[in-house]
Length: 103
Image (cartoon, rainbow, N blue to C red):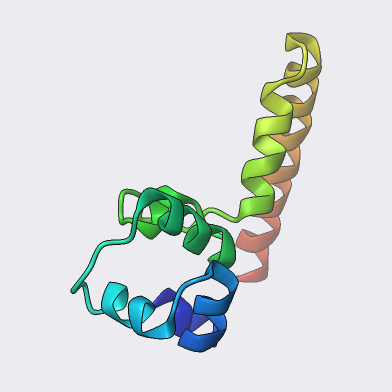
């Protein structure tokens, strides 16, 4: 479903992952289960988390956002606090802007 939503052909995705399109078809029809290595490559090619791909998360996480979170997590505590304070303010501003736009 995700592949189709992204308008990627089976052949194109299979090539990115390094498998035969028939194998990808079997995965999509749930006739076979990919190895963790192949599942990771599929998640990377589709730009989603592995958890999302295997159905453990119901929200699609954008890879670039996850990478930013990981980067922030590695920073010193004081820097994390400042960034999170700023992000919280920007999120609240965006939420307020959406609320007023719908009136």
